[in-house]
Length: 87
Image (cartoon, rainbow, N blue to C red; front, top):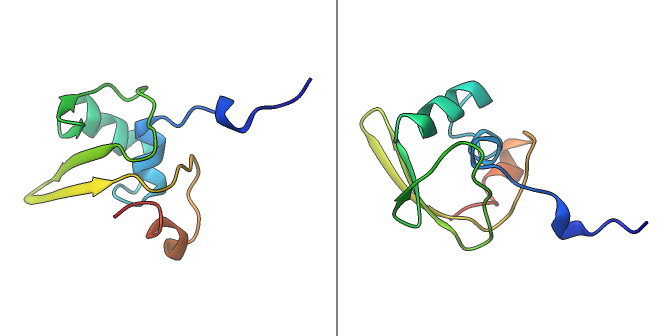
């Protein structure tokens, strides 16, 4: 059975954690649940899957980020890699 590379799902809570907007996945999921994260101008749930070119509106305390998804990752890696998965 061949494994398709597109079959893997990239949840928003995992991606936000991998992009280092939050320290833990729990905090990322909690922020999504509380309505501080919007994808393409729509409120989402933590299990929502992301796609390339999705636009996110991320509110953290008194900061507002508008980011475009350039890469899809589910696990935390080096900070240099995390900076390359969004613009």
